[in-house]
Image 1 (cartoon, rainbow, N blue to C red):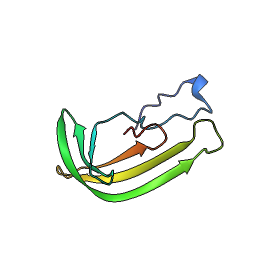
Image 2: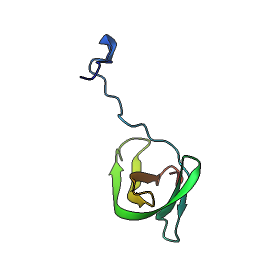
Image 3: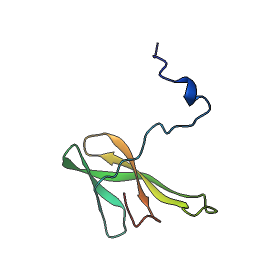
Image 4: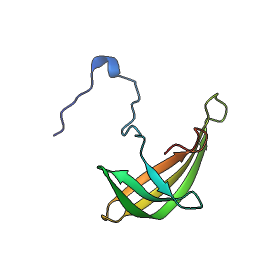
Length: 90
């Protein structure tokens, strides 16, 4: 059984499950990621899937992101995204 960590004042609130972290990415000439820095070292990867999200266009800070599912050399899969509005930050 998993311990309930909710507080009474959290009722009705939405919280992100995984908060994005700024990472270092090496990209190829097309802007696709080819390596990511994880755990203090560079891991090469292969793009397995990619998609784009255009959301909240009616707000002052719209969300435009290019997502990439990478298969890393370690066998691990990870998803990274490039914030296209935020100045190409991964």
